[in-house]
Amino acid sequence: MRRPVIYYIRHGETDWNAGHRLQGQADTPLNAAGERQAQRCGKILRKLLKLHERDPADLDYVSSPLSRARVTMELIRTALGLDPAGYRIDPRLIEMSFGEWDGLDFAALQTQQAEALALRQQDPWHFVPPGGESYEQL
Image (cartoon, rainbow, N blue to C red):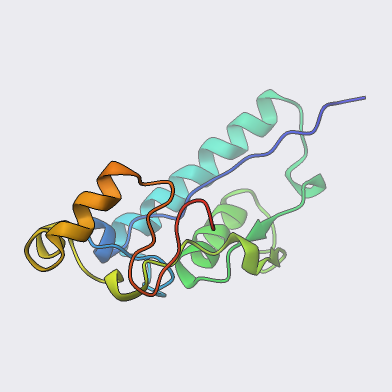
């Protein structure tokens, strides 16, 4: 019996990623670079699956409900020769919430929330941003 294998792929780049902004659960779209990254990921995954003699159609595909994750999934499935829409959405895969920090970059946090940012750096596992959640809660 084969051991289960999980192929985990993070979404492609967004303008907020490029701008070093905290995205959290904000539904920011992929940018052109992110679309290219997703397409490349699909090609790499296709080669990897072929190497391991796995049929892409036999796998279960699951995405976060955020559009950047769904578009990444659809571009990957297209590169695998699969129906782009043939996957499940699971809300448990949504990114952590940064609450009031969503959309802020680290420079703004240093200026506006330096004390809280220092607490986060001391204990990132338990720190909860205002209105958000900690890594532990996630």
